[in-house]
Image 1 (cartoon, rainbow, N blue to C red):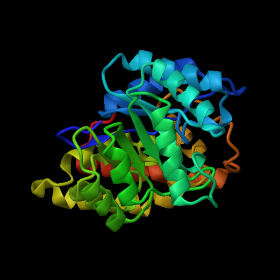
Image 2 (cartoon, rainbow, N blue to C red):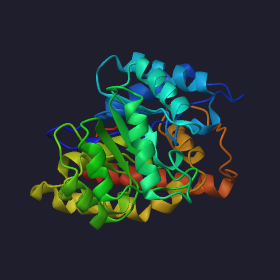
Image 3 (cartoon, rainbow, N blue to C red):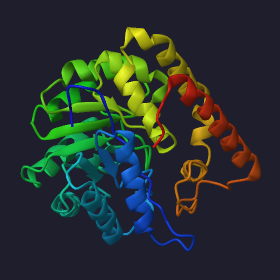
Length: 309
């Protein structure tokens, strides 16, 4: 997943119909939307996709559909671990790989209980790697069921196997990210930061790109930031974009992903706000906040001269 230029890897939404079934036509439109915005790859079947509210067959159907629409244009990664015995997890990793993914993502909080040691976690990772042959993998420090962070030293161990190509980092700690990048630098591997509070600093520190929920509101902005973060002639605009992401962080996380689906509706994308995940009530007051975000982004888009998809 690592390229010479920085890249944005969207954490994909799953569109549903108003009765709760998967809307594959909308998934096609959404996939094309990410690609048109300039995404360097796609992360399907992730937390933003409501992966824990999908059945195993649905997960595979969604991943396969995305890969068909992408048709080799960019790499696609997707989650393949959902708890249980290592042999059981390894079997599903193989099924996800068979859909055509470029890497299968391992959820750190599903490889060891919260009370179990780092040594146990490491052992499980290597057991899973042993049982999945040569399949490329990645890690996601998902906050559900709990957030287990990978230390820089352990990430180095895993990356040195040559099997790990992607890491979605959620530590929120720039110093930790710098140390991970320093220790785990290897051709073919990329660390993608999820935290937009220090997006520019992370890119300058050497992260391969960004993989964040903000891309489910305005993916072209995240792509633009990956392209211009170190452009001295654009520094004022880069600073403005970074501050916008900081200022708007709370509103974008509130009852997400309903809010992002509503925002995409405002942008003209035909997608329902239905979500299977219990994230709270999308009240008129929250809708008004998202309307304000929409207006503020329109002003930023003009200032940055962004071409909307």
